[in-house]
Structures are given as C-alpha cells and as structure tokens.
Length: 433
Image (cartoon, one colour):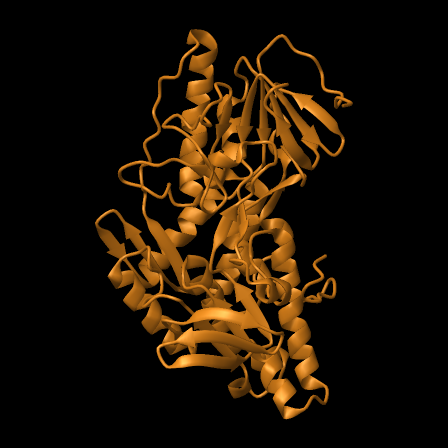
C-alpha cells in the first residue's frame, strides 16, 4: 500500500478521522502540544449542523454555516490536513487506508460522526431527504422551491396538492425546527414570492412516532412547542409510525390503522446512526452503528485506538444506551481525550474518566420563540429564543460566520426577508448531487 506523503516528525502521531465537532475540538485542544496531528476528512470544511435547516429554508447562505478546515487551523503548526475518503483501518499495522494511500499512526481517534438512519426503509431513503450535511440543506432548498415553481405552471389539482404538501418525519429538535421554519415561510413569504399559489393550499405536517414531540426534553417544552407549531399552522400527527413512501403517498400506522398522506416533500429527521469504518471487529459495533468504548473513550481491545462523539458508545449507569448523539457530548469527549492522550504519552496509562456534564437542551420554534431546558430551569418564548440565538452564535466556527449570521438574524428580526430563494442546482430525489 502506497503511503500518503506526510512530513515526518519525531513527535507521536495522532491521526483523527473526521472534522465534525469531535475532531475539530480535539485538534483545538492539542494545538501546539508535543504531538503531530493528522486530520482526515472527505470534505475540506467543518459544517455547523444545528443551523442547516436555516440554509434549507433560504434563511442563511450556505457559506455562513461552513468553515474551511485549513483556514480554521492556519496558525496550527503541528496539524496536517488531508482531504481523503477513509476506506478502512488496519489495527495490526497501525494504518488508516484511504482512497489516496495509507497513513500510519501512533494513536488513532475515530470521530466520523453520524448520518441519517432510515431504519431499512429503502423507499423512504430513495424518495426523501435527511438534514445532516450542507449538501442535504442545499438539495432540500432546491426541492422545496422546485415544487413551488411546478405548482404554478398548469399542474392538475391533485398534482398541486401533492407539490405543496411538506412532511417532516421525526419530532425531535431538528424536526420541530424544520417544521417551524416551513410554517413561517408559508405565513410570511409564500404570498410575496409565489402570489399564484393559494396559501391555504400549502400544508405542513410534523409526523412523530411517539405521543409527544421533543421527547428528550421536559413536558413543558413539548407542550409549548406543540401549541406554538399548531398556532403557526403545522398539523402535528402523533403516534404515527411511518412505513413507506412511493414518491406520492406517505404510508404510516396510527391508532386508527394504516393511513395514507399525499406528500410532495419528505424531510426525514427521525433517526441517526454512526458512520462505521471497515476494519474493526464486528463485536465492537453496538446498536445504532456505534463503536464500543470504555470510560476513557478507548476502543475495547486496543491501547492506541479511540472513538469520540456520535460514533462512540460508552455505556454507563446514567446512559445505558450510550450518551446522546449531540454536539456537547462530542466537544466534551474531545477535550477529555486530549488530556488522556498527553497523559498516556508521558505515563503509559490513562487517568481522566469521561463524565458528561449536561448543559441543557434547546429547540427554536419560530423567529421569536424557542424552548430551553437548562438544568431545572425552563425558558420559552422570546427569552428562550434569545438564549438559543446567543449560544448558537458563540458556538459557530469562524469569526466571519458569526458576524454574517448575527447580521442576518438582526435583519430578519425586523423583517421576514430570507437570504435567497435560489435553485442553484436541480434536485431529483434518489439522485443526490
């Protein structure tokens, strides 16, 4: 196997796979430390996933939520980045195999994140779209706008009804935020941009398998989000488990039996799964495609292989099914692992056990409304929205992005004008860009 040309160093080499929240924060905490960092990712940018839905609805420009990796770490003297597709790992030879060759390591950190989980529903996978990448967001924006354009030019009534029905599947924070954004688009922008379409024709549904939306948040958050979405015109369908979608009718089980719903766009936010890499023992892969790790994020059976973020399955008394697949877990695990790697290099042992500090959960429902569970404190309405906005601005990578998003939000606070409604590229379900 040909090796990728990388500058040799006498420092221990730490290879990190993935430039998501976990990988990015591990590089930050090991920057200028006595290690050589090799960051591998198939994209040359980090994407801020919590705001992808705003790109999908035309509220933010795509480059406001992505940051070039090389620019983020231009002053990092001990980091080398390579844009490659990782194909497998060889733990016997301590190598990562990529499409351009092999990369040797002293320590390997798998931070490959997660992708949309369609739970084996192939028709759903082929005819709907998730919201896990900037490509997904741009494709979804095109799909929404294409359908509205088609609904204008002489379609039959049934076709118009289909083209103007949008279904969000999954009532977690991502689904609630997407449904709320679509509802505000309908309420404030549809008649301005598409006056030929009767606003009553556009329907937005939020379909949830459980008996309440935002099931991982407090009951207060669920109730407030439900009432707010209904007030915005979203039809919330509870206790409905989606079974199939043929490109026209969405099929789901409900307390009233099997139901059919005409739909033109299906947005799938109902589940995620880890991005597994070939080469690891199948016994290490837990439900949800997550790699089993110990309390130090060390992959079982390997002294020099670690996994952090969404891909890591750390079973504890508090989290018997692993930690939640959210950014805060990834960030905290990255910071803790950086201490462990440095300690391991010096002392040949691990010291710092990972303990997750839950800082709370949030979900925005509309332009001036959000819910937030911060320990025992519950916030909603404008105050919840303000807290949500400040935290997301602080968390954005890149100073330029922070300024661009802050200005955009400030303008939209007083107006309902969107960043753009451009169809940059045509989107056909089942044929992603």
